[in-house]
Image (cartoon, rainbow over all chains, first blue to last red; front, side):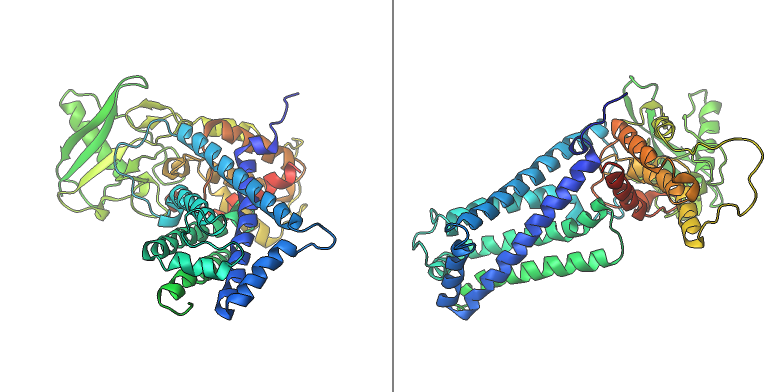
Length: 222
Length: 244
């Protein structure tokens, strides 16, 4: 009898992996945005929240253990998402070795679906920069460990940095617009509610995230 | 009207190919696109040149034989229409129309506009059937089918296997064809006993030839039967359940 390829070895299986890892990352970006809204309640509120993130799980777990657990899950999701995307891209290139010579005229494929690769790369590069800027403070000239509120303002007071944050979050929004719809299709759940959900989800995340650099630039938060 | 046809000419699978432009005069708007190619071929034969090879059979949109890329779209610019049902009334005097074969690793080029779509037959062989005892015809209404299910199964069964979904897909994926062929059996009671084996067999066979679905929805837009990508979601769900 022929041996079955593992589920992850099939392209449809890789799409499940992309959908589930995408869902994990979507949950994260939503919570990340909601948590950061504390910036509007002042320095104490945001810094206390940041401290709480390190404490959750205590006293059952030692300090930061749950946080590191979650970070590990996120890293695994990022790895699975990127690896599956890469390997499906290779498969798709092979599926059309001779390209169309005449210009293609796309009817249904939209900007978001056609640019997933690029918006994804922008988001990854942004996340690296974001960690250097606000987690490790490497690229933040006035970084004070533990004073999140101060660090955010010090970073966004640099206009080019604030603009980069806005652009990266728009790319994230475009990625989510297709991704949040696509994950249901890949998992086999269909209905017209999918588009409504993806627009609402991408909209909420982008509006929330973009509001932070804008609020600092326009002096709403200082 | 007069049109200019820019047609892909390629003598064989391993020969180099290129576009050649032909002028066709006195095109009437009642002509189908295939009849335009017929006129071109009569012209070429009269000049002692090699006619353009292209596939066609029923010419009434139900057999799935015809199909070329017309101005960058599979089966041309009109939705829900096979190449044979595309009429020249859509075009204007002096238009230049670009005609290229479907391109996919699963559809190797044979000649000019003709590609070999037998990969679709391999997918059907991998499970696109039901095993039934032959003999006298069963009594009518012996197996009851809910109207909603039979409607959906019939929507899927409209697939004529032309390959436009693969041709239109930016990834060269065969999902819409496979999904339609799966759905029209998986939705009906007769298809249930072999549902899991069928789904796994056809999906795995599909992946030997074609790319993967990234949900662009180009396939459904190109499909002459306008088959919905909801069937692809159904394929994804059935494969998930079958592999569990």
